[in-house]
Length: 379
Picture 1 (cartoon, one colour):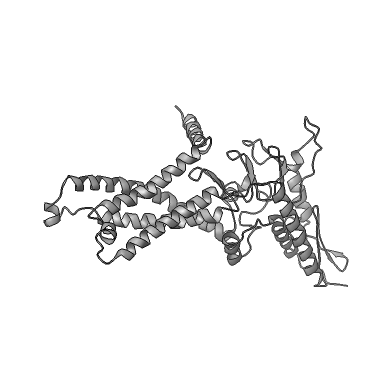
Picture 2: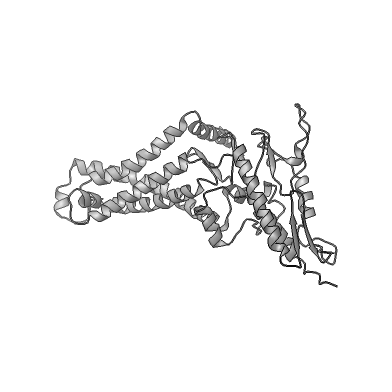
């Protein structure tokens, strides 16, 4: 069997685990590992955890701390699993539309008070005026310094579907008259797309998940270990789960290493070494293998998602940037959603309602265009 066949089998196995009731199997396996390894450490008489909580040697606080961290990791795991990741429906679209109107009105009023620049935002154009002088975004050689709003609009009109591997996506410009005579749609200036599966206009940063069969706000990825999508509503719970599970794994590895019997000293414990100790030693070895493999995965995920939190990005945007309509024409170091590190963390951890990212994107693009050329002084 070639590499293509192996990849197909892995993909089918992940699909089976995440569909048709497989989510219960995945979550049961995670819960079993989370409870089984600490239970083994607790039952092992050579373990510090056994001494803390069974023998009451005066350090029971550390035992309660260990199980408190374990409980927190399970709570955030199930919060990430059971929280709606941000499935897009008509109610969500209406709420985002109201937020967009409010934000654009605020921007208009704020900029008009300055007296020298008028920022006018709509669904199709953003114009900059200065005492009836037009601000051009082209340099002396008549080449664009950065993409102005006309270039952005033209760019997104020329873009097709998100990926040839995913036929459920299409840019607005690619929605032509179909079999049911649906009218074609003009491309949005911000590159938002129409989902032909959900039959909705996707909010910016949304993507259709073929496993969940729904569009997800600020789509990050579909996680097989959670058996659900990670999106705008549950990304913070996923990050907190990774934080606590890494602490628990490190704590468990330390306890497991200290519970191995010493074979280098001739003491009473070596004389009392029995079949039970051999069994617990084998369990310790198995636990260590599981902890090392799991720890390598979770620590790398935690580091990567911490970077995404600080920079206000998603896994999908970071990995598939060259195929995303609203990012592919930007420089690699351009991040239109960067609000500042403190604001990024607040938006990630503390925001409880979906954010209208289209307004953030437009303001970022408009600011880049405005900064590319100095303002023309009034005559």
